[in-house]
Length: 457
Image (cartoon, rainbow, N blue to C red; front, side):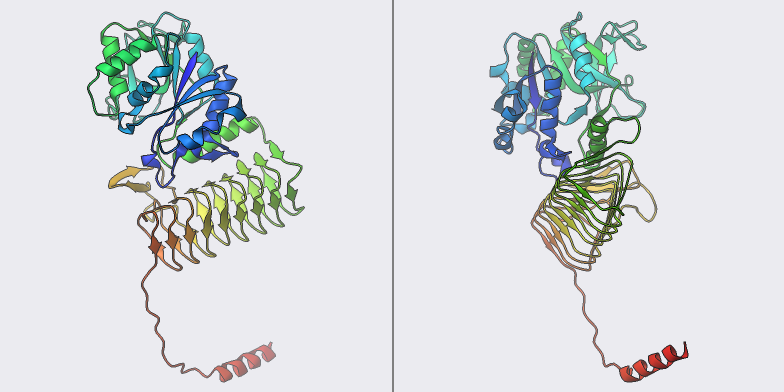
């Protein structure tokens, strides 16, 4: 079976994270994790659809994984999934295809369930997950009622056949509780291409509209219920959830496990609790505390009296003296010194001056709201810090407020409060005026008094 891996997105909702396909987790980019997952599932014939912005990076990763990769470029990125599938048309033959979004983190069992179901009596199979709370995605409407898995799909009166897909219906208007995951098998991909070409739409829902039209014309599509972990990466706060997912898969979920390289140097007075992965070349100095789940990438240093808890720390980072990193994602080459960084996403090659702190809790303790080009989005939690792009420098004693984004290649000056988004390639500094007046105190007398007091002791 041929796989079409969708990786052409521009990561607009992730800015200033440049390309989420290449976010590194546990030392490997997201797209490498996904290709390895496909390989484990026995799917080694992959067409990766990229964009002009990332094809050059994608072309270098196939051989080292042992997966046959064909590349194609989606020129019009505004056409979403439909444009991606049409870009891969020349690679689509008569054999079934599996369409998978690189931005959906799932477990290996997702592929096993879908491939097993694909032997059943339908033309297409869509992986779905039952959601207890509203999710802003596509909901599938099942024919009749259902009550669990059966015959490779959803059991019950409709046999798991899909009647319709409703995109973002709004809370309270869901046609059911099954959300469509972008992991689909189409037995007749040529028909899918035919319908994609029929749909005259400039919107990015052309793929879903084509599926709806196919169903109205009698093409049978079946929902396959999946109960494992699933986390789509749409916004920056999803990054840490994906880290936890990859981390749990790496160490297992039962009991505390410490995966510490023999080439790491751990001081005797350092404290390491819970599940951790510590790579080679890491140095953990005296009095440092690492509280899992934590990943510390190769070559990184956790200095004296530093605390790292519930966080991902990339390669060649320095968690300097007295710093605390809490529930945060740090890329590679991040430098800190006497800083607090909580619930944040930090890019590569970022330096924080001494004393700089990240605010991660509003004074009113309400959910943190982030501004995405004028659109206010609730991050779903009252704790979220900042998102910092690559190649950023922050001066000493700066204060970064909750929900702020700092664009790549920006400098933030010392001693200022940053409470709004900073565009990329900016130099931010505050305005203040020193007040200098005559000193009316007698310093020599002060020293004599200090000496007298000292003698009285």
